[in-house]
Length: 143
Image (cartoon, rainbow, N blue to C red; front, side):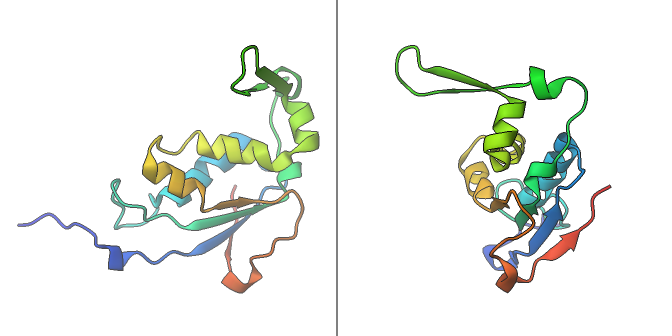
């Protein structure tokens, strides 16, 4: 018996479309990261990028529960001394709704070279329109 190891020629990337309207952020992010990593495929291998391309529309209509809109804080550092910047979820949702989903999904991907290439396969749009009609994405209904 020999262990099967997938080859580069076995990779066939698909395009998926997810409508985020009314979906809970964490559940949406975990399902999206699963598709980006390729864990839904029978030939999944952790050392190869078998993931698919994912398009998320209506990012501005994603939901979170409880008091998170006023308590959840996003932080980033400018790189300068004293350059820590913080924003509350509600403000980020108003200004950059795509960034919330992108950061949630990126946090669930591996922290290495393959994880960075997986993150590049994610496209998030605030409204219902996207410029990827030519790829004929398959729409996925999440519960």
